[in-house]
Structure formats: structure tokens, C-alpha cells
Length: 161
Image (cartoon, rainbow, N blue to C red; front, side, top):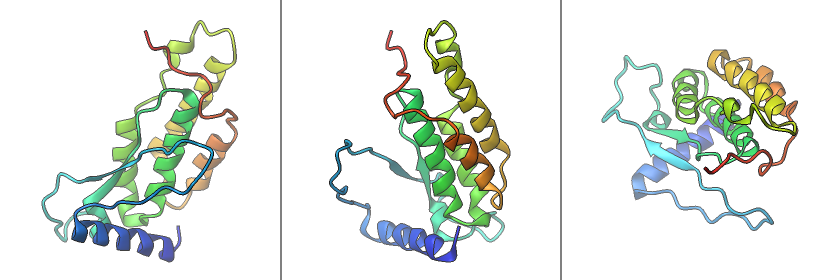
């Protein structure tokens, strides 16, 4: 996570606070646009005693609710990437919030699955465990775990019963 990336995020947060909302037109692509949220923290103000003291702590990345294991992988990787860009001081709180919101992958739903979704979910569980212990200077370990899992965003959809 370079300083220029963190400064860019900081600038976006300050700009978003100043205008009340951050609106971005998604780039044209063949994939449908994915909504992601930038949610204000419950803290009214930041004190010097807090771990993360810059303006980026006033906002946090909230993953969208996945509907498949493929989407889960993308959202969990997104948590790691987003929080890494905030720098060492903000990393732990950001990733903790993001991972808590996302939750563990629903592997019990795939126990009787005839294809490879159960095995894939088990790999995602291991990668999720990595997110709970990773340090800001070793995020590549978790990225490698996620990159070893090959599936499209629509694969292994959650049952809608």
C-alpha cells in the first residue's frame, strides 16, 4: 500500500464529506455495475487517542451481500484491498469491520453439493481465516489464498429457499 494510494483515498473521503456524497459513474463494461458502500463511522469525531487518526477513518468499506461463493471471494478480496490502501494505522479497524460485516462463507449450505462448491467453500474459509489474523505488512499471504481459488462471480450460487 503506497502513500499515493492512501492519499488518493484520503482525498476522496475529504471530498465526499465536503459535498455530502460521492457519486461516480461506473466505467462501461460487459459486467453489471456492482454497488459498494462507503459508510460513515459511528464516531462523531476523531480523537488523538484513536488508532486511525486521519479523515479516512470517518468512512469504511462495506462489502455488498454476496449471492454466490464467487461473489463472496470478490467481496472478501475487496475488503483486503480497500483496507490495505488506508495504511497501517487504519488497517486493523477497517478490515475487522469489513470482515465482520461479510461473515464466514456459508459452507454448511454446500455439504450435499455434487459439484466442487463444498471444496471451494472450504478454501474460502481458510482465506477468511487469514483475513482475521493478517497484518498490514503481509497482505500478500491472504491475496495468494484468494488467488488460488478459481471461480467466476456467478459460480456456486447460494440456495434461495
